Length: 170
Image (tube, rainbow, N blue to C red):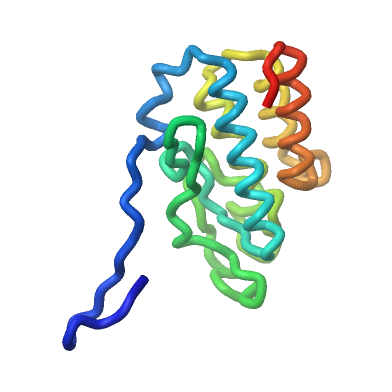
């Protein structure tokens, strides 16, 4: 919500009660929680991608965890569906999490850049943990975008299958 109080502009935002994914990373020992969090991130990405929005800065600091639920935050670098000229000449994102195509310019960026960044995020959080999630992360962060998951829904299906293979029902 936004508006004016007298002559002063204001923005009111939701107060989130939880933690950034980056701050709870060292305490992850519950594999069901890991699968659930990353599955939920994929579902959230799929929804914004359906709207034609590309986040362009998926990283542990931009995933807010509330129990097993998540909120993707910091939409300051988004590529909007009707504004594909927006930031075309600018490399946007966080070094290390940014896809190869996003490091050049926005012309080559599509929703798969977020999938790449989520793959890097999963690897970062796991630091060599669950093999099946690492395999998913590796596919998501393949340099050639044609070889990545083509949608967040496809990645979510792979996470769900890997969870089932580990006896976890999502």
